[in-house]
Every structure is written in C-alpha cells, then in structure tokens.
Image 1 (cartoon, rainbow, N blue to C red):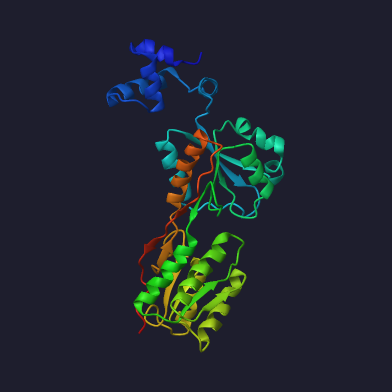
Image 2: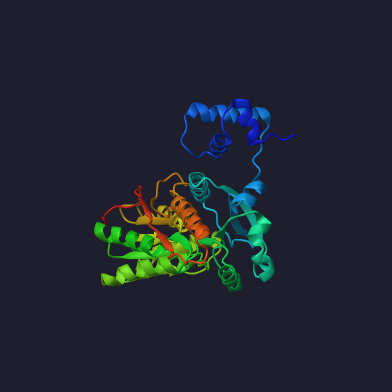
Length: 332
C-alpha cells in the first residue's frame, strides 16, 4: 500500500497541511521539522501523486523542454540546462524533456491536447531556426503557455543579444586603437545570430567611418585553415579580427602562427562564443553569450505565461559577458 500524506501526519502527530508544505518545499517551518517529515516520507515509501495534484489545482507542477527531432534544429549550450534547472527549482516546478517530430507540431488536434498528453503546464521551446510557422500560429491560437529560447521573435522569447555581442567586441578593439578590423564567419548557418553578429560589427565600424573587411562564406571545417591563411597573407590583412564562434578563431590563430604573425602584438582575436574559448591551450578573449541567464529568464517568463496564457510578453534580450583573454592588445 502506498503511503499518503495523512499517514505521515498521523505517524508524526502533526497536521497534513504541514506535511504537504514540507514535501513541496514551501511554507515556513523549522528545518528540523522539515527534515523529520522528509525522513518519515522516505521510511514509509511516500510518492507524490501528480494526478491528484492536477485534479485539485489544475496544474501538473511540471514544465517541459521541447526539442526538435531534426538535426541541428535544437541547440543545447552547456550552461542552458543548469540555468533552466536552477530557476525551475526556485519556482518549485519539475522539468521534463520532450522531443516531437514536425508533423505533430503542425497538427491542430495534437497541439490542442499537447499539455495534457505531456502532463505539463507549459513549454520551453528549444527550436532555434527553420521551425514550422504553422506551429507558432497553433501555439498562439490555442493559448499554449510557451516561451522560445535562442529564437528571435517579437514576443514570448528569450535570446542572446548577438548584435550587441559583435558591436561590443568591435568597440573594444576600436578603443584599443585598432582601425583595420576584420570579421570572419565560415559557417553561415540560418540561425539569426549569423546575420546579427555581422550587423553588429558592420554598423559599429561604419559609424566610425572605418572600412569593413569581412570573410563570410560557407566553408567545410577541414577547408577553413587554408582559407583564413590566404586571407591573412593578403595586403589588406587586419590588425584585429572578430570571429562568429571559436572554430574560426582557432583556425586564424593557427594560420597566424605559421605565418609568424604574433598574437596579440600583430593580430588581436576576439571569439564570440557560448563559453570561454580556450581548447587549444590559449585563453582567447571571448564575448560570451550568457545561456544560463537565457534559461533562467525563459523559466521566469513561462511562469508568467502559465498564469496569463492569453497575454503576449515582450521578448527579452540577454546581454553578453566580456571575458578578457590573452589574444587582444593595442596594435603594435
């Protein structure tokens, strides 16, 4: 027989309300009392009844992280999950992981019943680009409490401010005295960050009447080294470069070493990335996207959506973090 909260209360001689608060981690009580209740619950084999809670409150006490089933259409930076989990704990809600194919996400009947099927109060959508537009419309039409992460929408999304990441990187180099600043993106993916990072660089350079020197094209990873080496050998070689992410930064650093271009004395490098770029044994100067804040902000926004699913919430841009490294210096 499965133990109940009433049985725990009888065993300890306290009220069921106190037991309920202790097991949910809510309410004010002595830590010794809370610990005693939790120990008794373990001893009696108590399990929380989510179904009963859903019937009683209309809430499952759980939010779901929805991932695309298509290759590279969801992105999970290593700080995103800890940010989500920490804030979910603060909000006293559970977290589940869901994957669903596109054909289900554009099915009207499926979306209408999605939360009940998944025993969830709302969705954190990690579907970063090329998501079906019909899916967005259905989620809004049926008022499914949802927040998009790392997708640039006008409402109900939390995403890194990639324009500011590139603009701030460019401003830092200009303040150091650099005037010939390049920008390298050899992935050219369809995520909004590809265009936004270039725009942040270009707008900042043009505002200072400085010439643009971009190297932006789709290049397979094995072919990137010779491409950047040829670029650095040109007469138009920059004194500093900003890269879309760490892969380009490593290729530029390796090519510079072969060409006897000193980093940072002759060439400064800033990588825009999701964590410190240091996997080649050099601490690169990094403009870091704060995905822990993206995850936490998305959970906070989703809890608001659960309370008022009909209301649109203006999207939130998360500011980047500057991580100084060994690859930037004033021009020699």
